[in-house]
Image (cartoon, rainbow, N blue to C red; front, top):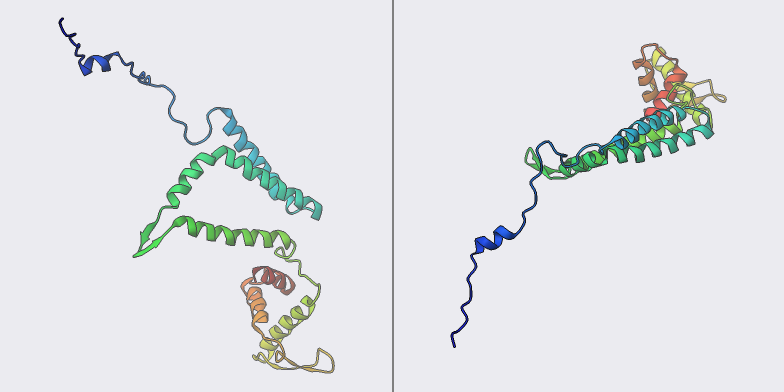
Length: 212
């Protein structure tokens, strides 16, 4: 009997039978990037801007209203993420990569987070004291005492050129600026002088308190 002869198949013949994936046509759809395809991204971005505008405007309304403004700003944040979340994540990935600046390794993302924390603190303080930074001086608790001390220090500096002395404006007289430090008083006076007469000393106290 004759041994069966095994047929040898060229590798090229096998590969020719396997169907290769079709090449993308010229001018076809590209990989998604930036805003989501279609009108959904534009709608989300437009709604985010509307909610942001309404939220910022509501923050300066009566007390119950600014809570709604904070909620609208939260909605704007969610909608903004839906509209531009993909490119923002790509950009954040680049910012998270370490870089060398003047021999020191830094991550821009860390610096951005630190800056955003400071900005968030300023925004929250401004919302809570929205009347103060516009020049409405607080009069609760010890604010009246500190306002008087700053005003009296300004008068003492203008008349005698000194920070300390004896005042007859309180009680039967008392040693002015000996019992409390004068740093806060000088801060308010500095804000008042930098205003160049654009606001009163009472408004300078309010603005200085907000800045402090």
